[in-house]
Image (cartoon, rainbow, N blue to C red; front, side, top):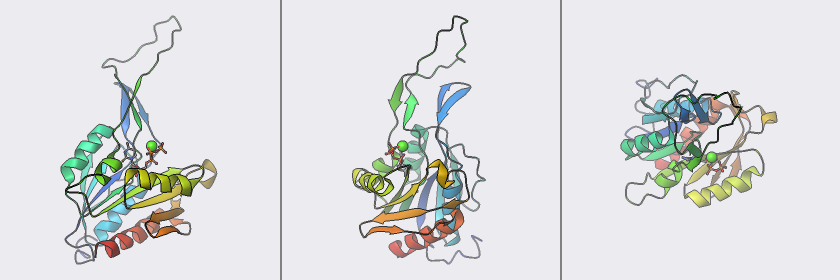
Length: 224
Ligand code: CTP
Ligand code: CA
């Protein structure tokens, strides 16, 4: 596919995509993570590549198969993801589809934590992870011309997503309702609203692959 469409509208453009969860260790055998299959991010990377873009795909440990024809960088933690993103820049556009863990365990144990037999429960101290989307959105020199974030919400979707766009400084937010009853989490379909300077635009519910193709086409228009 990549070779056949290497002359597509994104030929000569470099686009960065983050995807999947991050895993934040508690100890060598336990971690904290968000639910994320990585399927939407993977579909976006493949759709951008199919339009001729050179894609760098920075992914946490996701179940989804890795996209073909793109440069894949595997990471575990949010801090590793930030470092990989930094090393992959400059890019013409960046799409942040990863479900980054907001907090990590402040001092992960290098040995497996054991029950001590007394019934005493462990406690975890958290530290906030860097916000990768906000960091890239607020870069001065070297900021990608188009920065796209996601907002997975369970309530007040548009209000939360619009506030997120303002707070982080990205150009577009792809918002979706991931309440369990929508079946979107872990499913093959997505129902999103694209929020930009131009306002908000509801896309009908469609396959994640179709969402990816539509988003890639919009990105191509914006970069043209
Ligand atoms: N994101 C990121 N780095 C983080 C947290 C989030 O790059 N540490 C990105 C996600 O990839 C997504 C966007 O920011 O594109 C929104 O993520 P989300 O979790 O919805 O936003 P938060 O700011 O973390 O707010 P909250 O989880 O409290 O709703
Ligand atoms: Ca979050």
